[in-house]
Image (cartoon, rainbow over all chains, first blue to last red; front, side):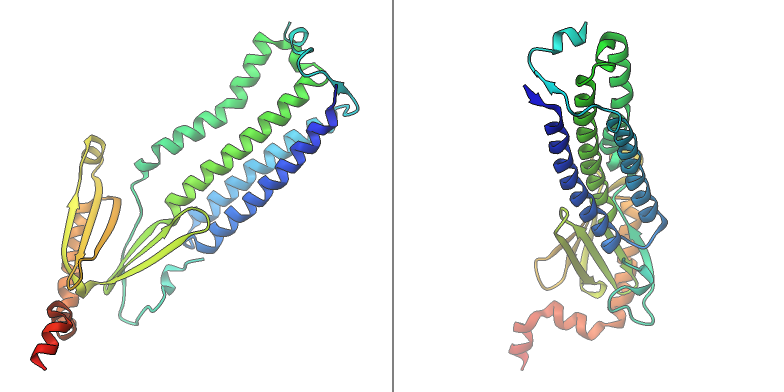
Length: 81
Length: 195
């Protein structure tokens, strides 16, 4: 049995790595990109989609009961039916 | 940010003639990647709703699916954007005096090289392949005098027009810098023999 919250912690760690990658990517774009509208628009779309996914995921995850214990290999079949 | 009006070492009489990027068609694979990525959540939701509706209300399988799918989506989004950046940050700027090649090599590596137009000896445009021919894009190879140095401009639109334009500009620039061009063309050895 694995506590469900462990998966949330793992996800948060991976999201921290993702945030670092995003920060570096946008920094490089804004530092070395040519000063054009395309540069700003592409950065805005990139960050906008990330914000949208975070808001959507976060608002769902806030409703989950994280105190559950899960059996990864024994409980999938009933869920599929 | 790189302001094209304030290029490094820009002289008063220097004008920008071309700002070149790879043809947008070279982004086709990336666009397909974006379409697939953006369709994935919709297809996934539809598949779960129709083939495994029990998972959508499951107390922990659905949260796990949300965690994994958001992670996968975001990282693919990041890698696709980095591919776009690789396209967007690679530029060739042709001015009335020089050609600048600014190339982004991954996230942490960048190469800026410059070539004076009067040093140009030969410019070759190459258009190879069906799509390249249909949409008129290809490579321009610039060879300089003096050294066996090549300067490649890849997958740019209208390579033949750009080649003509560069040759014209190089000719004008050579006339202006005749003395320096001759010295460079003959090389330091020739100069030493004469001396």
